[in-house]
Structures are given as C-alpha cells and as structure tokens.
Length: 79
Image (cartoon, rainbow, N blue to C red; front, side):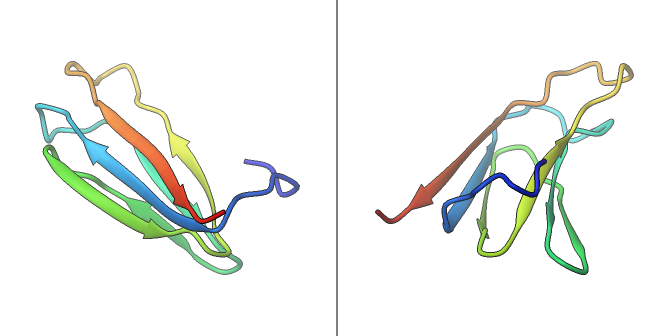
C-alpha cells in the first residue's frame, strides 16, 4: 500500500474458490480518507467493488488456517 501508487479507476472483482468458510485472516481491505471497508468473502461467491478513490491491501492468513483460501482478484477498467 503506497500513497504514490496510481490505480486505474474501474471495478475490482473477487471470486472466492475456497472450500471452507472458516477464516484466520485472509481478507481484503479498501481504504478511503476516513473509513475502511473490510471485504469478507464466502466460498463460491463473486464480489464487485467500485474502486474510485480507494486504496486496498490484503490481510494475510495466519498459521492456524488449515484449508487454503483461494481468491481470484482482478480489475475491470476502461481505456
């Protein structure tokens, strides 16, 4: 997460391909000037986030997570 990093304005998507709903971390946080938006996905789900004026980071999973968390993350932008 860098303030100087430039992000293309568009829509981010997150596809959760995990088998287990139990999580020990492993979520994505979006930040604007005064609040944080924590994205908790569930297995077999698709999430869309309008990323205008937002920065984001991934909170990593800790050692207690037994099953893998599989997230496909990307952005749709207009050129």
